[in-house]
Amino acid sequence: MNSFQKIILLLKKDFLLEWRQKYSIYGLILYITSAVFAIKMLQDRPEGETWNVLFWIILLFVSINAVAKSFLQESKNRNLYYYTVHHPRDIIISKLIYNVVMMLMMSFIGLFLFVLLLGDPIVYFQQFLLMVITGGISLSLLFTTLAAIAGKAGGNSALIAILGFPVVIPQIILLSDLSKPLFVTLQVTGWWQFYGALLLLDFLIIVLSIILFPFIWKE
Image (tube, rainbow, N blue to C red; front, side, top):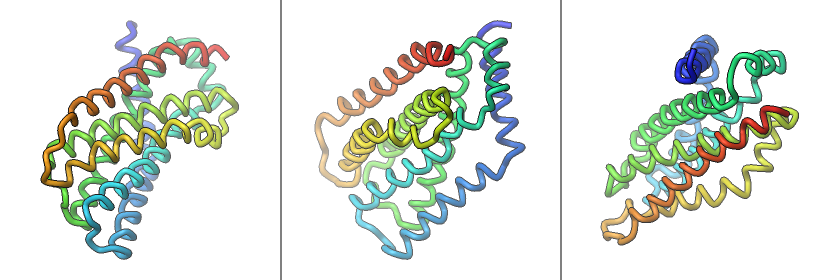
């Protein structure tokens, strides 16, 4: 069995486990719905800048709940079994892909609920949709890497918050700042250059995860 087949097998396992434990997905959907509904009760139709900031904050907390558990829920015996039959590169790639799919699904649900309940102040919707896709991928990649480190450091979920705080805050600010011009009619120059920097950051996270995870896994 080659590496690609093993990645597909690991992905199939993760999706089957998620399907059997539907309460995890339902809990995330309930969390998003409750948060957006609470915002609507407090401020019915927020202005564009407030709408944008609230959206990314909600997406941040959703990503923590959706992605951070990916390695923390694995038992020591299961990890030992994986160690004997899978290469660590296959494991981290499968986790990255799985969490990206999950986070994209939650991002689209969040965007739908925001537009449905809080209105649509977005001027450049296509670019903002691109930002939602890229932002969801960015957060999932980052928290998958942090969860892998925390999972191999005693499985303490608090470690994710400690490691993630100095990294996640600049990323959320970047996502919010990149999205802000999409709520006004003025054309902002240089937007695509900053968007390219965000893509480069995502690529670096993927490369570092694949390179560093085998060393963490040996521990």
